[in-house]
Image 1 (cartoon, rainbow, N blue to C red):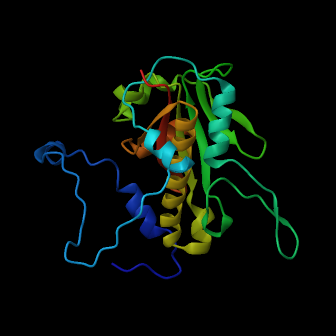
Image 2 (tube, helix red, strand yellow):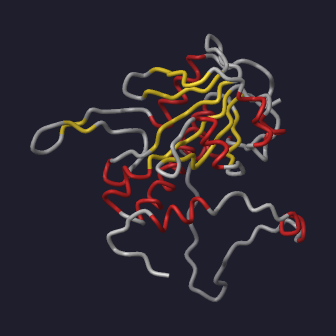
Length: 247
C-alpha cells in the first residue's frame, strides 16, 4: 500500500486509530518476565570510567513507577511547578530577523509544539474536581467539564485500579496537524518523541519534589478523547501520567 506524497496524514491516522490496546491475555501471560539486552562480546571494548552522578542521574535513580497512590490532595502550587517543568513556556527568545520565539521546556520539531495538556483532577487543593485544559501562555487552568469523570474511568484506563486515588492524571493531547503540515507522515513520529520528552520532564520534576508518577499507555483512545472533548482524528491523547504520592 502506498500513500500519495501530497497526503501527509492518512498513514499516521490509520496507525493511530488502529493501535488501541491489544487485549491479548495469552500474549501478556504466556512468557516469563524477561528483560533483553544486547552485547557484542567479541567486539573491541572500551571501559567507561567512573564519574560522579549529576542532578539528572540522581533524579533518574529516584524515579519510580508506583501502582498505589495515597488519597491526599496535591497543593496547587506544586501542580503548577510540575506543569511548568513538563511543558511550560520559557521564552520569549529573540529570533534572527525580528520577532520572538516562545521556547518551551522540551525540544520540538520546527518549534511547532503540537501538544496540549489536559488534567483529570481528582484531588487538588483549591481546584474543583473536573477536566481542565492548561493555558500555558496565560498560566491558568481552564475547566472544560465539571462532569464526574471518575465514574467512567475504569472503562477507559486499564490501569485504573493503580491510579484511582491519584490526585491528578495528566493527559498529553496532540494536535496532529501542527507538526504534520510541515513534516507530513514523519511529523507523527516527532509528536510521539515530544510527548516522551514532556513525560520524562514530569517524572524527574516529581522525583525532585518527592512525588511519584505512573506513565500509562493502556487506555481506550476514542473513549478518552470523547471524555476530554478532543476532535478525533485531528487530535488525540498520546500519553497519560498519574501524579501524586505513593501509598
